[in-house]
Length: 178
Image (cartoon, rainbow, N blue to C red):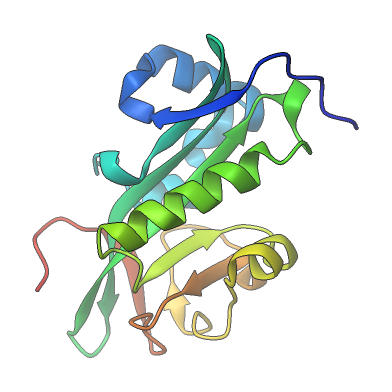
């Protein structure tokens, strides 16, 4: 599929600048109405989006894509928790997929996470070839992780110097972590 032509420049804006119903509609179009049952949603259940690292791509007033980042934690079996950021979903209007919008948004979110000192422990569920090639994510430290639902192990990816390489559970960050 070839992405539809975009007639005006793409602007990256804070996701808070876009009406939430527009974001939800785009997410439904990109992932389907059953998206709330996915494991990634369970990991971050009840958490607010991190506004400083969540963005929308606009062409004029048309919403082309969004990316959201969430505060989660790795609850280690050794009782040592790690504050983490879950990236995703990266949603792109189906008419504009495969045109680089998702890559643009992901790069922007990663830059924002780094600027906010949140880039030491990032995770996502996604295509390892894509996220590895363009952004350095891999599954080398996630083999012992548990998640609240089904996951294809090779798609549970992480990057950053503080990513734990031990057994534990990904869960919402329900309290402040040191």
